[in-house]
Length: 288
Image 1: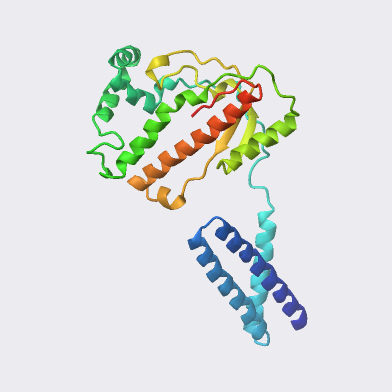
Image 2: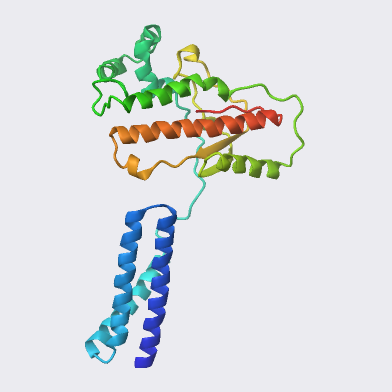
């Protein structure tokens, strides 16, 4: 019995150490150094426990504790196999309504710079006027008076968003007359490779549905209130990764700087992919 228990203990020592080691490797890859140190400490404590069980097998109490820990871990493993959630089913999106871009906070905040549009919007939604006016009294991001305004860095945030505004024309372009004869699977993989090459951490392609788009435009004055017409069949979704340390300091200027940086990065990737597709003969535009 003692030899069998020792064998089981060694097996659990090896398996648990390997498991925690995988966590350490994953944390290093993600540059989560706090998780690395905590995992290493956990691995040391875990190893010490199993080694202690092996060294003190002759003590009855220790042997009973050893058996108890093994039994509890086995039960936890079995318990983890229980299905806690109902079977995943396809969501019913038949009743999903498109969102009017004029109604979201950025578009509404922008109305203060376009009185003629504000008059049209608040005549339709007078109940929103009061709260919007109160918000608009507050300083904008990057302006003196904003809670976390920084004389040097706040201007960098404004510069990033100004650059984005001036680069909006890059989202569209002429489509090549002759479409390249490319296998659809190869084209899909190439799009993903280009996206990752230019900085995307993940990228996917999905059929474009009406509810993926706004019903009416509202962010920019020149096309405010226009109906959104979908002319495309598919969408490419690009994911960029924010620096967790900077985001963890929200809502300070560090978080705003990182957010603006990744807006620029995401727009760059989207614009390049859209241009690539247009050069290949496919109509495409970037939504940034």
